[in-house]
Amino acid sequence: MNDFAEKIPVADSGLRSGFANHAIDRLWLAEHATGQRGAALRFYRSLPTASIGLHQAAERELRLDYCARRGIDVARRATGGGALYLDPDQLGFSLVLRRPRAWEGLGLQDLLFLFCAGIANGLRQLGIDARFKRPNDLEVAGRKIASAFCGTSRKSVLLQGVVLLEADVKSMLEALRAPTEKLSADGLAAARERLITVRECQGTVPDPSRIRAALRAGLSSTLGLEFRSADWHLSGFDASLEAVGAERAHATTLDWTDAADSAIEALWRTPEATLRARAEIAGGLIERLELAGDIHIHPPALLKALEDELGGLAVDLAPEAVEEFFCRNGCDILGAASRDFSRLLQLLAEKHRLQGKMRLDRDEANSLMVVDEENLGPAQIVDRAGVMLVPYCAKPLWCKWRGRNECPECGLCEVGEAYALAREKGLAVHTITSYEHLVTTLKKMQADGVKGYLGMCCSHFFVKRHRAFREAGMPALLMDISGANCYELKQEEAAYAGKFQAQAEINLNLLQKVMHFVPPAAARQSAGGIAP
Image (cartoon, rainbow, N blue to C red):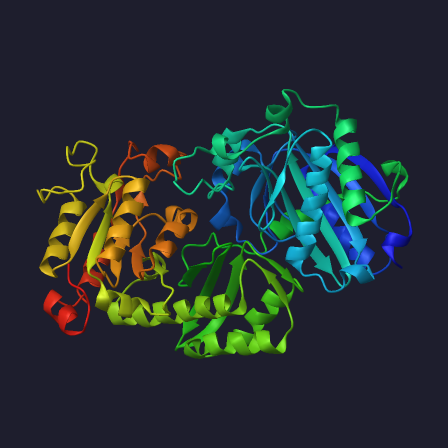
């Protein structure tokens, strides 16, 4: 059946739980793929829900304790992409249809571009000049107003959109561990300045029927579809209690909450995605592997097939096996490429080796993060490190040097110990006092010919601000900090400006183990490195 040959029914199913809305989309896509259901465009709103992408590990993306306390559903979409917070102030809509011949050669990015173009055309009918922002957002003057996601099953496609009518930014930041807004390049824009709503654009929220009509018209003209109104309650389909219950199980299919096991984790950032791997390794063999990420991938079962492929394999052989797997299996990945998964597994293997070499425990190994476009390993980065970067938030609140790029090494905190360890190996040390200072310092290091550096920052900062590290063009080994951090306390803006009023903690034991393997300055010079 060619869905373009007939009018697609449109209905509004009203306000429901996030579980119910996710269940309807998942089941509709599955039954449409087997010919049991026809195409449909459904509008809806959701009760407060933390919605994660199909391939994400919930614990790494959400503040699950906060969601539990506030009664916020945690649901997993049938589509890829990143986490977002849903509530009644957002208009959701889902389009399920079969790929027509005209779409046969289109990849996931092409489909999302078309869908976003349709949404943009609809918003323009409301007087809102929205533009596509790769890979799956819509912006007005650089501020996000909508997001789109894609899922597939056989030749059936599920396209989901969410438009911000209004925004409860506080709840959004509380629920999402790494907030979905991407702060502007200078790192100084607050979440409210990064988002924009229909109300802010219009001065009011138009009648819902007008918004639905505009989006329907935009999708129709852009995608070449014809729609017809339908009574949702006569459609013969709803979210059963069984289906809603199944959604709770879907949300926990990637459960990384257990901190007691010995799994090693690796993280790799691309310009558009965060990839994660978690593995149990024994005797150099991968006993259990889980892959996660805020990506779109077709076919969606490919990640599980890759996990199965690598199970039982020597971890050192995994990177090459990943490349071979993707060569054999045709796929479409939005946000990453096969080489990124290979690099992810390479980091996993390198962490495993480093764990033995430096005698790191599980938590210490997992707290290491790598910035590296040269395909080096953590050990090689340590060999060529010439600088150490320390975050100001690790200095005590009472310290008058907290906001300065210096340290008197008084011996009353771990930062002083870090300075001393760096001096022993001839490393220059900088206390990073703000986001702008980080960017400036990295640029100067690059100009000075620094070949690599060590540093400390929280993993949330690493994920969100990875662009600054990557664009500096120098390999780095970063160590996660613990204790109070601006992301857990929702004070990112204050932290970026150098005004965060809480204290984080450096893992001094890990730092000592890493610094033990840093060559003296003379050795780095003789090897061709640039000493500070």
